[in-house]
Image (cartoon, rainbow, N blue to C red; front, side, top):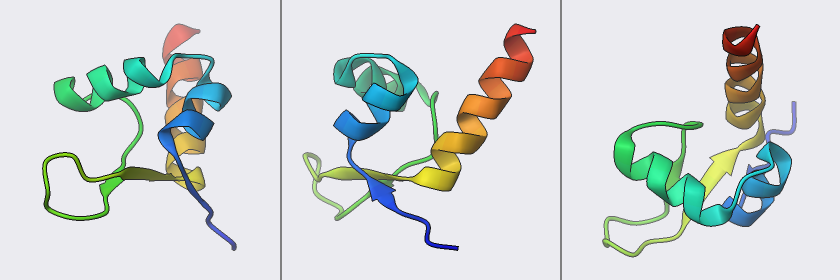
Length: 64
């Protein structure tokens, strides 16, 4: 399976939220799993498509 790495902007578009919302979720320990590309505080963040899909599925089940 080709598990693509996505930018916060791409993930925000898929989830229908603002990229800033994803940043807030990361600070609160919410949202899909993510990976920082280095240890630096302002390091770029990436999300795996499979983690975004899992998060979306869990969120839909919780809303039902």
